Image (cartoon, rainbow, N blue to C red):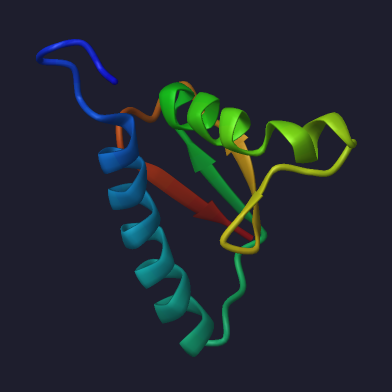
Length: 83
């Protein structure tokens, strides 16, 4: 549960994933294959929590087939794809 008035993290993380997957598909159709997705600190923390077991096993943080990195300059559902 989230406190009253607080954004639901599941909702915005799903929105970020929807946007990123559409962008990844468009890039792949153009023959470009990003290897990294940079996200803001709150999204990065959410992904780390969701993938906690994988990270404890020493696996990289992967979402949608690309490594996820933290970029504190990004906020909310912003993301950047990098080669």
